[in-house]
Image (cartoon, rainbow, N blue to C red):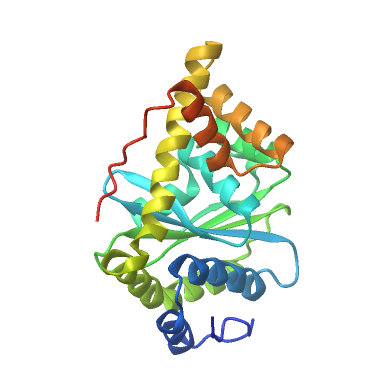
Length: 246
């Protein structure tokens, strides 16, 4: 893939636009966009980044700086609310200065805190009706996102919105549509796996999802792959359906 995303200092929207046009893989471009965001916005410190896409009744991470970053996004989806989902749905910037003091989403914050993350920033993209999406930034430092950092993230999301709109359109109308569709299908498998665990263990949704995340980390297996194994084991002849249709 040929792109200018390798330059951590470029702000030119045309560079991002050309990068997606040059890309043969939408998911690869979105992953590189997240990695570029980390280089541009982290000031050299550890940071995770994901892109949440909302279409119809489903939410999924369609790009991430790492597998670990994607898993952190997945935690939020299990509660169907949180900073990144709120930012995407309401098109507002949402900041969590210290997850250990977060009162809006206490159960979600507790799980995130267990992973060593301390602050979160979610910034909406402007997709002009294509869908809704947000840039999700996670840091292990308290109060990481200063006013300057928030403004930089807002500017970055604004500049990247045109390229993300194009990526969504390409995924909808080309042979690579499976890139985004598969991400949302994996969410369905995770939701079903959580339900299976709840039924078998007689536990809450939060407990079930926490178990799934910990098992994924312990076994060094992707969350969606572990969920698929659980679903397949429960019913080998059943294939989860998804509400996300192109």
